[in-house]
Picture 1 (tube, helix red, strand yellow):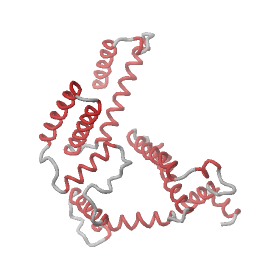
Picture 2 (tube, one colour):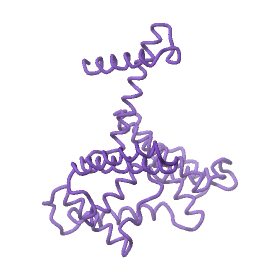
Picture 3 (cartoon, helix red, strand yellow):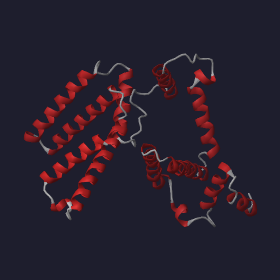
Length: 272
């Protein structure tokens, strides 16, 4: 594309995805591009990709629909960025990314795009999805392909789901809770008689089983923990506000005083 055509597209509000692709190409132009963008590679951009995904999730959690549009745009830009670098290296282009995900969605939804019956429950459709994914992976181990870069809590649940599909799972939630009690006791014993490394291991075992409980309860563990984080932030903010009204800061208070203010914040939330 010549410079004039490129400029027209870059400044065309109705340019759509072609406009965004051209903007990305211009940013990475070896002669006239942005020096910062030219220095980047897949590894340096990956953390931004993860961050943008979390910002999308955060906007959804807060129901900040006005912000979500921008956050989704930021995440889309990450996909465009990686595709541009891949194109420069001769691996693939953005069109290949679009074709690959389109082919995958069609193949994994035979009840929509094929001849399979749509008269299935969500659980049955999920099992079909996983069966098709397993066929795509070929002859791999049950746990192969679960990304190492996932948040540890999310990866734990994905590993457990994979194992459960081949029958390696507790039959009931009660047994998972019993295991949590057992792991908590082992952690407590380790604190008294074992090394830091063994305490570390026991703590990890406890977290892993708690993640399994979320799976059995059909709870999104990441969402539940995000909600708990938000609740803690909100209530601690109430403690700070109450102390500030007395001309004090948390470090100038006592644990007993802050505990009382915490309880007051809980009561106020429930009353509201």
